[in-house]
Image 1: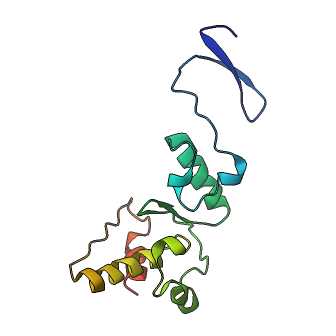
Image 2 (image 1 turned 135 degrees about the horizontal axis):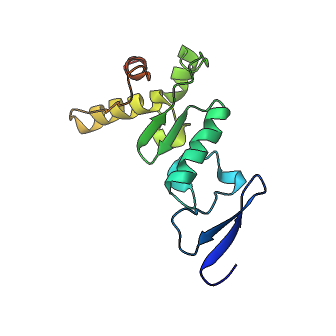
Image 3 (image 1 turned 90 degrees about the vertical axis):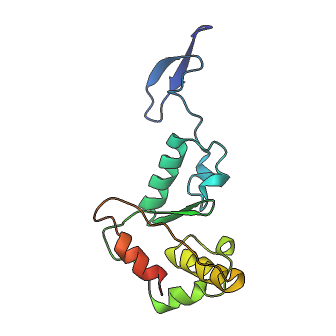
Length: 142
């Protein structure tokens, strides 16, 4: 629009005028990268892009996402058949980075580190009441 404003077109076709340099504007992650297994691979690692990627993954029933060594889990409020013995076996003796994000990968990494480093391991599980912390902890202990 001018030297002080930008005209932005939103996904729904609306035009919005924002001041140049505004923190209200964030570059969008390209469509092919939106559902990244590890958020640290996003070109712009900011809150809007992270939340959008988590939303895209959730709608694809991918409830686990990595952010480096951190696992983000979203409670699907339904049984997605992600915790059977066959699934568990796919994470046994595997490096966490070589597998899809999963609570089993976190448990396996901690167990492997316990064996190799011979030092206690800590896994922090946090979330709101009813978000699935207890169930996640049970799965990690398998």
